[in-house]
Length: 510
Ligand code: HEM
Image (tube, rainbow, N blue to C red; front, side):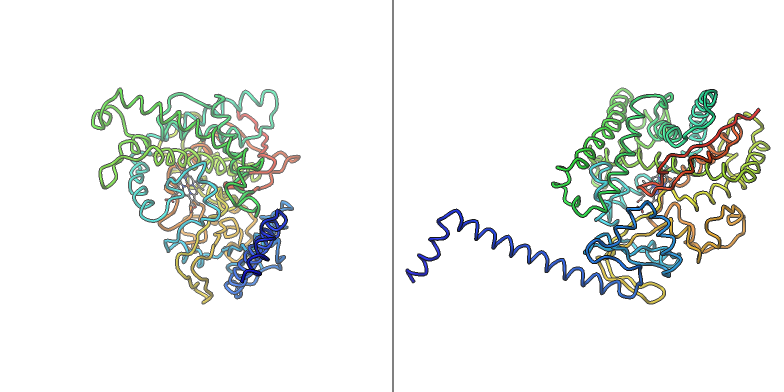
């Protein structure tokens, strides 16, 4: 007994002994982690065994798909070759089933699976747990509370505000083309859509398209969009503490601070204004309640108001969702029309016959431009502003063809691949607005720019109004043509951007 105690305490007493024990423990932990990862990989392999996919590396997964800038083309090839869905490995122990089939989409969007924790959680430091990231009962309560803010009675007067913001942008373009008739439009359109959401949802007065705060907010959003997208795919950036220590993590933190400064300012100003205006009834009698009023006056079932954290999350969510998506939509629609002059001209003639040459646009005009609406939809099909969304299965799922996946599996609904799937859309790369002609038949889940089911886009009507106003007024003022030396390269981020911007040639119409 005494011998064995001695032999144990001697090595422990020395530094090298401690190091030996520590390295043994480290090795054991490493082996344990490796075994865990191995078993997890086996579980994942078994889960996807009935879903064929391109060969992937056991450690690096399908990383090369993201690295050569050909991600969207590779997605299209998958959709053409592997029916309905195929697994994509981010690395050896992380896989997601990419779905691009309408029947599959229908089954998934008809359930109530939460958003994929693995990717959406990286948005939380920026937009917090607002409507986009919430799940379960909290999501339901917030959705019910915010739905009235998108009632058509509220949207109607917004059309005038949208008209004002678009005209400010078009005036700017008119000045710019005196020096150079080629304009990179994405940034201008982003400033315009930010201006619009600030006026509509947050009742901001005047135009903010030239102010520096808006410009730095737009830049911060673009940075965050890139950083979050890269983080999802980087195995070393998954842990929050480690990520914060990396240059990207610090950049992400700074960009969040800039975005929050902008939204904090909006909330602070409104709280001060409401203190002067008094209670809900007094405010209601003076002006219509906007989105921010609804949030500030909202009461939960137990009668308490939204916490400052929840309020900021909703403001950050709507500030981002309410402008970046529509900026992408409008920019790509204008590009699609620039590259299809005949369709462009037909839309222009439709708008001219409706509005003459200068009258401002109203709510009632918006459903009197069927051909322009068809072109907008066709552009949203080719360039869906949100290229993909994700869910984490909260119970096993069986698809209509009998294949199934277990609870806990991550699925990625690729709106882009669905819209470019040749099995769903014949000649998918062709811009053909007649696909959306009245009476044309298609699967209920073949066209999903705004997603579908209970968690579809709450801002869909708002977005459609804004896109119609922007397209109509732009076509009345300019003839659009592409810049042959700078063809945009679609770039899937949180929203669909172009890697090299969207450059158009603008000619002022007489
Ligand atoms: C062309 C413009 C737009 C497109 C293509 C679009 C698309 C989408 C999509 C695909 C989703 C589902 C996201 C997911 O499941 O993760 C979504 C959700 C959402 N959108 Fe939009 N959106 C647009 C404009 C807007 C606007 C203008 C607003 C606000 C004013 C908005 C607010 C939201 C919110 C809050 C959600 C989360 C809804 C929920 O989960 O209940 N969106 N949008």
